[in-house]
Length: 108
Image 1 (cartoon, rainbow, N blue to C red):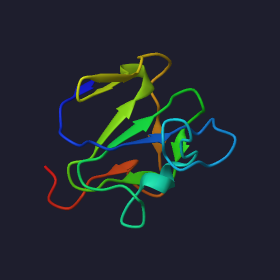
Image 2 (image 1 turned 135 degrees about the vertical axis):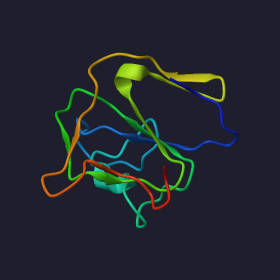
Image 3 (image 1 turned 45 degrees about the horizontal axis):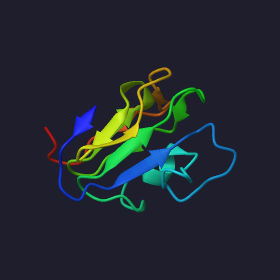
């Protein structure tokens, strides 16, 4: 997937990582809740990149305005920089008590 937006921040999540990182490419979060909702460090327009292969991401995710979720199976190119090659399986987000992905208020 190619994303063309100036000053885009990318947050990485890998539920196969042994320890929870800070969301950078070399230190991804290992739970999806780290990028979910108002308490997360993410901002409007940020990209959330999910690695595949670690089983389902559970608990769901609440997006902020204009955020994008990209799975490893699509790869990641931002502002012309190829960051992650496409590979693996499509990550799955589940939430036993509601929607797997909740869009920000007013998002079409």
